[in-house]
Image (cartoon, rainbow, N blue to C red):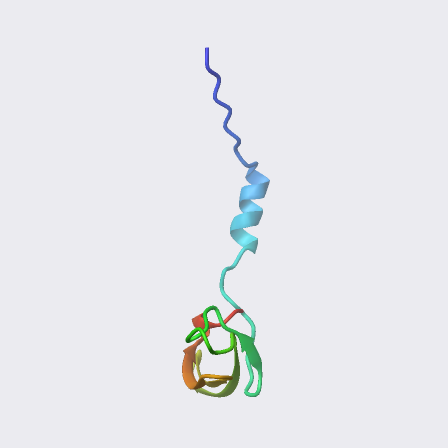
Length: 79
């Protein structure tokens, strides 16, 4: 006889996970802030960028050491 054990979260845990977890980043960025990039633009550039100005909502003109100026979407740097 084979017994299969299945772990099921309790209802309270399921409710707390569904109501308290929000994957959206709520950090407000300002010009002159350094951010950590998800991926460097090339193997020689740094993995951080200086935010220069917000071009549109969530899109930043930035400067990356050893690379230069680059337009970054908010999804391209760590939150």
